[in-house]
Image (cartoon, rainbow, N blue to C red):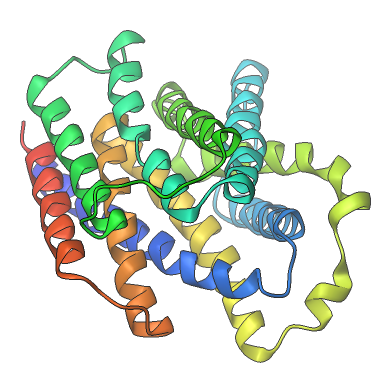
Length: 291
């Protein structure tokens, strides 16, 4: 039964990677008509409200004050702070640089999980994490192995956002030992969204949404319902079932799905080196699955 559950977790986490990979295409399309912060506000505020109604329908909403405060910290780190660092990293440096630096979070996550005592240090899993990052680097740089030029400020913000994402995932583990993935997802999302509310008067422009086409609204629906509500829930489920560091290795497959989605939906070119990088990434995931 344990093996079946673990196998299901692997499949669901690959689904998360596919959802987030396709979301790169959806967000890229949406940003042609919507400003970055405006899009963050809409996605996470609407997504958190949607999650809260799901929680009301399926579970008891009560939670101890101590755990609620822990969830507030989680939301501040993983929703509010991470999203702003990530968005402004893209503003100041290239997409390639941000994509590579963001994918160092499994490295930080593996180290933090061991230092905080949540998981035992496993050299084989560390090797899998490093190997996966190498695959991501090859895939994103298309085999050139050279980062694009970019502002140092953007690179620093990308590093900080990567560290905050690692903390966000690792710090959720104690809560997931006591509460369901849906409850942890909902309350962390609600508190993170609440901290975004002060930006509403300055950055929420509804006129940008009224101008969206049918494809734009479909992209927005996908970016909220699939990328936030479904994917965040499944991500937390993975942490609760197989641990934080092993779950985070699946983040490496996000650029793989993003590259294939861009090829299929946007007509972007696919390179042999990217296929090699994808192969290395899936090898690292297979390696991380082994005890």
